[in-house]
Amino acid sequence: MDNATQLPRVLIVDDSRMVRATIIKRIREHYDFREEVDGEAGWQALVLDHSIQLVISDLSMPVLDGYGLLTRIRASKLARIRDMPVVIISGEEGEEALQRAKALGVSDFISKSIGASELLARIDSLVKLWQTQNQLKENREQQVQDPDTGLFTRKYIELQAAQAMSHAMRHDSQVSAMVMGFDRFSGLREEHGAEVVQQLQMRFSKMLANKMRKEDSLGHFAGSQFAVISPGTPYPACESFANRLREAIAAANISLHGQRLSLSVSVGVANTPEDRVTSAGALLELAGARLKAAQQSGGNRVIACSTKAQIELVAPAIGNAIELISGGRESMVIPHLLKLGKQVLPLLRLLERELKLGLPMADIEKRMLDRAQEAEDAGQE
Image (cartoon, rainbow, N blue to C red; front, side, top):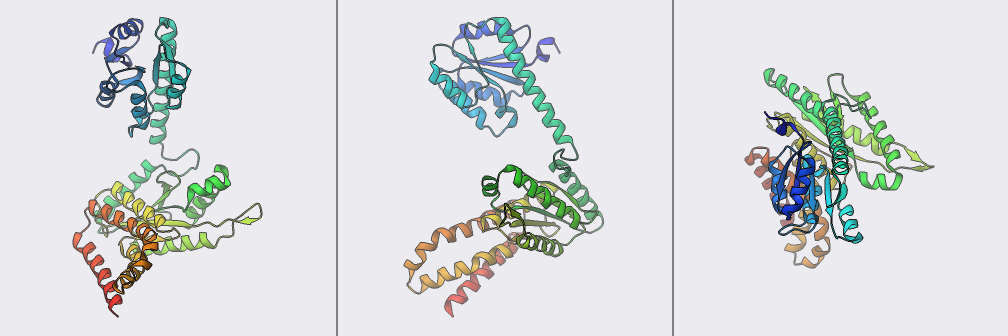
């Protein structure tokens, strides 16, 4: 491998061959480079070339301009692209154009007449910052415990779940997973501030830790949500624990500035072999999907391994709608359609999720048909 391939790679995107050649001349002894003639070609290069560590782009280009390229980069679902430093080559653009690029997330501006020393200094600074941030992120992901909360990281929780599932398969046992979080979390944070909400989360996690068995594992799932892996626990016991936890939070007398806070949590429960998932990631994701369905259905509830609980939530509303329609009173249903749709949609999404995870279609069909029959019978009585 020659020295050039070991250097950090810079992507230069400009429709002017002369501008590209000038930049390359100034950086080639310190950086490897790749050049593209428009934003679309630059975007394709970023997706395919994992060695690129910085982008230098013009604003005015055919096919896809610099604004479009910058927008795609910052909106990317790939962290390596989304967080990459982007430098704009400013020529005759006015202040308004530069402010627009700044609002889109540009990292720096350079002029086409910039000297070699200053150009290298700017690039060096951005590349080193990006490399440091990536290293910190990798180190954090490899940590067993989150440095801020002391709880297990998501990656370690998945490892614990995988080990528990492997043990359960050998000993004909089972593993349950719970994913839980405060309902209306964004509203809590906006109303009371991030610091207060963080304190609430810490108190909640400590309460969880005190109620768990030694063999259970508590850690982070995503954002403000927590996950618990419980080896050897059947889902009815896990669901019962989740409901006791939910009731304790709802009844808790937590006040702020003399006013009682109205708090509630929702919990999604998954279990193997009940759910027939084949990986730790799938077990946790299914519990997370059930948490989301519980919160979208109004919160302060637990959705466990079957969709029965979720169906029971919406069956009365569907039954009432059928009864009104069959009685020729469609006009009374219309004002409630939006609310009914919001109740049914989480169930449909949950069913879709469970089907993707390979759950037995016959079981799901039977549950749905049973509920449909009950609703129909109720309408005929």
